[in-house]
Image (tube, rainbow, N blue to C red; front, side, top):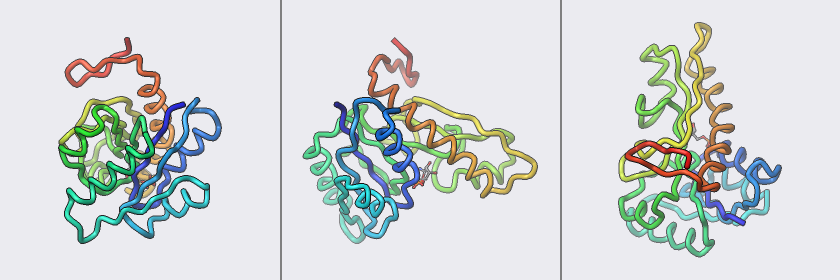
Length: 200
Ligand code: GRF
């Protein structure tokens, strides 16, 4: 049985998609061992509580980054997590934190990286005028939205789109992509050569 840890800061739709996949057996032989929010009133953490999951608020506001991260890392280690999924976690992770969990932290980003890293990626893509955008699940390294790519899904930008309709269609694909990426990583039959994830 593999244990997942989820870090979130907001509405938590990617967390819910992962939890639904675990419950439905689409992520087999896994459980969510901890859901941690740095924002006390995040909708995602309320839902984690409703679902009876181990839901922890570890507030980050007004605290030194190192102190907050030490507490988050300790909670994840206490729950013995095999894999950490960032699901709308609005905090940069320090090199120290990343080193605590080598190749065991995933992030989802709502663009086809390396295009449009950072905040409001869907708006950035829409404003730039790209015809195809999408989402990326990648390993977390020391740089923002940067580590080796596990899986991407493309989403066409329609003439009828605005940034909201585009973001909504990307989000649907995010929910599918995260489950697929978690299964790839938990299965473990891959190697990373340079930046490339290759099936063994
Ligand atoms: C998603 O668009 C995700 O790609 C980005 O933050 C957003 C989180 O949404 N990293 P939700 O909280 O999972 O609904």
